[in-house]
Amino acid sequence: MESLIDVKWLKESLLGRYSLKASLFLGLGDIIIQVKSNSEILIADLRRYFREFISWESHENILIYAIETDRESFFLPFQEKEPDPGKTKIKEEYCDLPDGRIVRKRLTGIVLIFNGQCNLAVGPCTANSNQIVNFINNRFIEWMLRRGSLLAHAAGVCLGERGLSIAGFSGTGKTTLALHLLTHGATFVSNDRLLVDCHDKLMRMYGVSKHPRVNPGTLLAIPGLETIMSEEEREDFGLLEGEDLWALEHKYDVIIDEVFGKKRFNLSAPLNGLLLLNWKRNDAPLTIRPIDIAQRPDLLAAFIKSPGLFFLPESAVAPPDLSPDRYVNILKRCEVFEASGGVNFDGAVDFCLDFLNREGSGHVGT
Image (cartoon, one colour):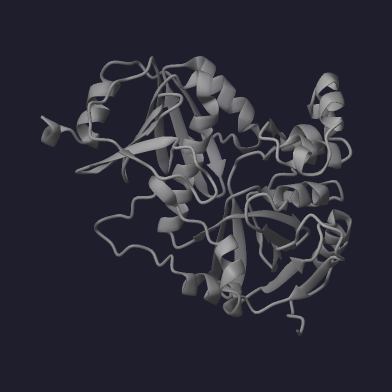
């Protein structure tokens, strides 16, 4: 029986049982995504979350089905997905089918079925709309990778016609620095995933339509963001210091237009520079200097992001080149800097604003 189960069969079986009358269109750059569901509540939640990117187009590049139901049982030989580096908890399991892949979220029971033509989420979607948000963005990322972009573990901001990417290993503060820059007038491009490409010798970055999720330390560190927490939470978290505060796993969504105003979330911008955060929480002075990324594989590793389970190269074409060498070749077209020494957001903000306000795009010497 297992040999008969494929994405096509699962799609026909599931869609034949539900009436998907609720829908919305999203415009992510030049890509139109339609989401269809049997849950008006889910579509309303998605409409609120993606309100900056609602499109009135009537056609789509990507069609996603989100079926609200109880946990579905799929009797398939699922494999555990190993945790990302630095993580220990197994959150996902997957099974490759003859024509695609199925991923099951262990905690919520959400099942995600996809190949190049079908994208389907099934399970308690409304109670776990954040996972549907992630699935939508994963479909966007796969589309961009197939067009030749590279995926980076980085944030992105722009000011006028200049853009800056901020990267670093998890916990180094790239999101916090990006939000600091927004308080100084910068526009948000992306939080934790960034797509980069080069056209006609011009570097561009493309953001992922996901609002930042930050810990209490970030909210308390940036004026105006502390109100996202309740007064009781502000008092409790305010008693913590240092690593005890920054290591908290409690997360909050920072909805960009609510906090910073309309039109402060732009999914496409020039990429003129990359700042790699290699600093530590100590009292050492902050140093920011230009580097040759080809000579620093340790820092390049902080920028490279694997597409993971949700990327399936098309079998009919050669897979895209996601090698470190290609990252190096693309980053040669922009300035790359390393921030070392002690964590100093004020100093980093000054550097970033000076870079973003600089005229021209010439490289600085080392």
